[in-house]
Amino acid sequence: MKILNAGQIRALDAYTIKNEPISSADLMERASQAFVNWFINCFDVSKSVSIFCGKGNNGGDGLAIARLLHAKGFQVRVFVIEYTDKESDDFKQNLERLAGNLQVQSIYESHAMPELHSDQIIIDALLGSGLSRPVAGLLGDVIEHVNGATGIIISIDIASGLYVDKPNEKSDTIVKPDHTVTFQLPKLAFMMPQNAEFTGDWHVVDIGLDKRFIEETLSPYYYTDKPAGEALTKKRGKFSHKGTFGHALILAGRYGKMGAAVLSSRACLRSGAGLLTVHVPECGYEILQISLPEAMLSIDPNQRNITELPELSSYSAIGIGPGIGQEPLTVRVLDELLEQISTPLIVDADGLNILSKHPDLIDKLPEKTILSPHPKEFQRLAGDSANEFERLELARNFAKKHNVVIILKGAYTAVILTNGDVHFNSTGNAGMATGGSGDVLTGILTALLAQKYTPEDAAIFGVYQHGLAGDRAAERKTKTAMIASDIIENLGW
Image (cartoon, rainbow, N blue to C red; front, side, top):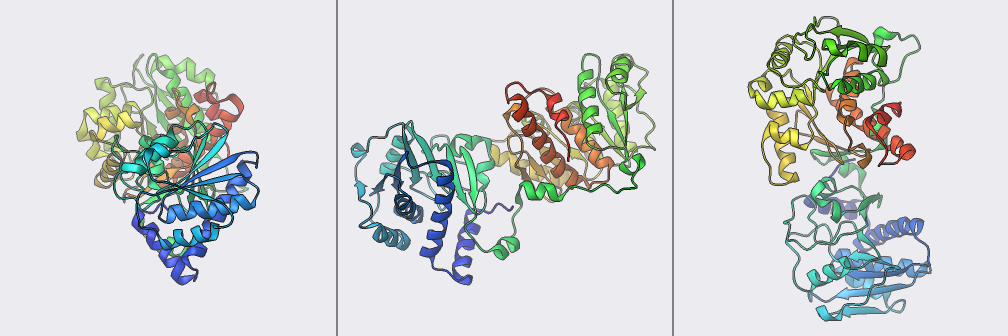
């Protein structure tokens, strides 16, 4: 699923209107019907509805939705905000269609706001995706009034005041919806942590915009939904054997951090690697031997830390970083690995911290190495950024400059390819914000690389399956109670 910018969204609407062909008013009717179909599946007629409409096309959507909900038996109040004399043609047409069905109340002044009750659903139809400047004046006052309500707030297409594809200032006035029902495609703004309170739970409804235009329109941004995730699954042949699925090597753990080695290794085994060898310091021998009977061990001569690189010729993919620390001898091991490696590589956790402190090693990374930082690790690796949009651009530039794949972890984890394309992930939940979840992802990615998934597909698919297992775990354990091991126990595809 592509993510388009504001200009491309306008062009998509215009292309559909011209080439379907369909009138803009009828396309608005189709979009409003799609919204209503979603709405009636979530709420019954016992709920009264208050709709706040601007005077552009988003307001036209609101008027059409008011008429359709009224026809379904909902008690509907409609408020038009008189902040301008200009009205879009489709707004005018839907205002005429509403005449005789519902009374429209105009709001001219800030002190004339309607009373809003907790049992009401409030629909925000003030401003749409074409917004180009901060909201002020009467519209700003209406947004503040809506945000002060205790009922459920739903925004049509995008919250009023929120930009589609650029950052808002902290002082901007923006609706804070519980739900956003967006048309055809998600918006880039939805993917940014800074916009969480301005999106709520968002839902995409298909309004029949031109599919060929979407396919042919260039965008660096994608959203990995269920069909896209499932399409990457490799089927297993009947006559496969353990050698078919690769031999993975994971270098992980130090004294006091052997749990990271256990978690990444268990996840690797659960993700389909045919064979797994784990290289750990001597203190990890009994821990790994007992907890992972399916894995083979390579034991470092040092009791507490990884200090030597094992022989690499038999491995088809390598993961390094979970719990290894940053001791000088461990740094040397990573340096030697980068000098010798000829197989796909994933670097995480302390491996990333070593790269941050020794940036000369970054230039030694093999092409398409996967790096999987959380935000702070990425900040140490690539530098500061003013907001999430800027951080995403920083990551895109970093990936292109160093020819690596970056997994920027978060609520909609961004997989950034070597060409700068970004694939946001649709799975996962806040219950995964617990120690060890990243180690689990490292194990999954190492297993996929061992099975000859390309680094790009391994990153996109691995992140998707990691999040999906987290969603299954949350259903069984709740988001509060789940731990990283629960993610592993719920892997499977």
